[in-house]
Image (cartoon, rainbow, N blue to C red; front, side, top):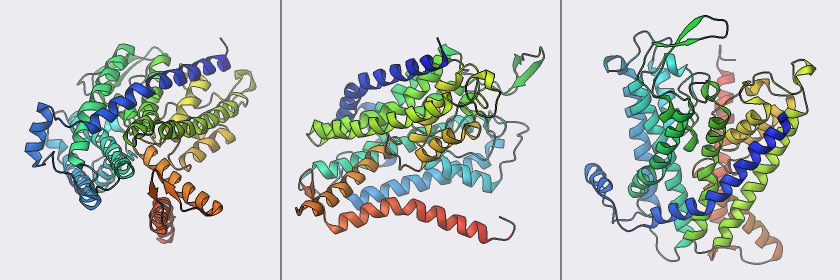
Length: 441
């Protein structure tokens, strides 16, 4: 089988699998967020945090709950990292000292589902912080994104009520009923494929191709890898991320990880269709996501397979920065999926891609997280685009703009526009400040 045909088979199987789970997973998530009963574990959690699961919140209370939970999470993770040297399962001689600045950066990064890392995970963070700090945020930050998306959908679905649900209920259910079960199964599959899951700190000895032995930090890798991809987080246990053989050992574990990246985001439109009682609307959003994603991945494959990059022509494709066990095509699909979902996980070095292949990764990151976007963020990003589209179309034909029976007024358009303006405003302002500071340029 040639590299091209292997890549096509990899992509075709991925498309079929996502299509197969679209309806059952989407329907299941609809039942989770619409259920009236709570299980025993959920009731215990509600009592511990003082939440009333039967009391719904308006948009202001819902937003305040999201912000309060995020603020508390940032402070907890910040302190947790600073005191990890006094806790069990810590690294005795971390390569990178955990300074307050680095801890603050990391806490904000993981709580916001950004997962940008300014350190090597295996040589900086102890196992307890990896499990009880970073991995927990991998779950709840994804659950927050899903909760916000569901709250927005309820706003479209409900005709007169001002309540959008209960954030604490949505958070707990999304974590316990959706993310946790899938992540457990995925972790078991990754372990079966060769990903490690242990509490070794410095005694994981491997034989290199040169015949020498190398000591590599072990740890609870498979469990963190599963939710890293499922929650579109991206922060790796190892500095090499999903290119590391302990995180992503084989071609089929690589396929599993790409599937995890996309599965929830591509299934949420079905949940949306069920909640607004218009399955056609859900299919329309899913179709737009799929078409945009297929165009992107097709271009990525063409650019990577048809060019040779900086390696000798005899290789046949752009192999620089690519793991040999994955190959160019599978790595290109992974790169496209991780940038389309704003995950950040990598199984190859994107900076070594061809000029046009690298352009596609940058284009995907700036596309707005809608094809299919991150966990939850892809759906609400697409809905905001739908609101703007309906408004413009209504103006063109001279009709009052409506979407799902709700009138779209200039107020809604201003709010929708602010969604797209906040990110570039923050990026450009921060860049300008950094460039203006002496010694930072």
